[in-house]
Image 1: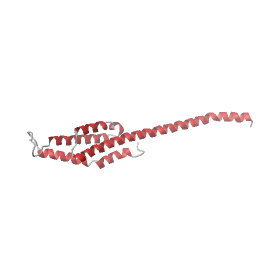
Image 2: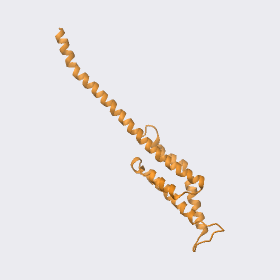
Image 3: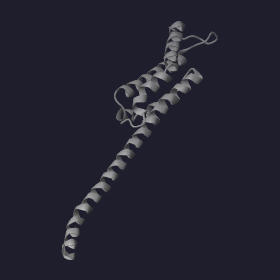
Image 4: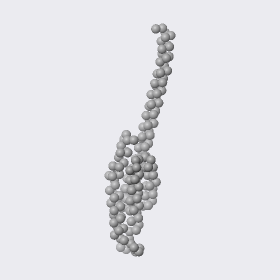
Amino acid sequence: MTCQSVVALLSALLTPVIAIITTYIAWQQWQGNRQKLRFDQYEKRLRIYQEVVKILGHIMRDADVRLEDLMLFRANTAEADFLFGPEIPKYIEEVFTRGLALRTAMVQYRDAYQEKPPGYDHVAIVNESDKQLRWLTEQYEPAKQKFSKYLKVGAS
């Protein structure tokens, strides 16, 4: 084999080698971008889970919830429709609705020293408040279970 034929052979192999290297680099970039997308999605999902835990914590601490906290909760979890399956937005809506029902019952509540409005039903208001407060304060574990499939490392 002459020197010219070796050079010609190496020149001919150079183009496919460059193509293979370029393809490998492109594949690595694609993998990196895919991992970043997963990480970004995980962070957004975690933030929404943290908002659920936060509102539940407020309710457990105060045995009540402020309307401002509920509205902030709703705004901070609005993105859930785009990040989770339908069960999570439905669950978030239930937390919001029950929090609102608790707030309404607490606003309507009158103690023994307060004037009662016409048609005031003390037992019904106390029962409603108790029902909502019980459900909401029992949600730490169910929330964790519902979100866990979306927050496991490597989950899509």
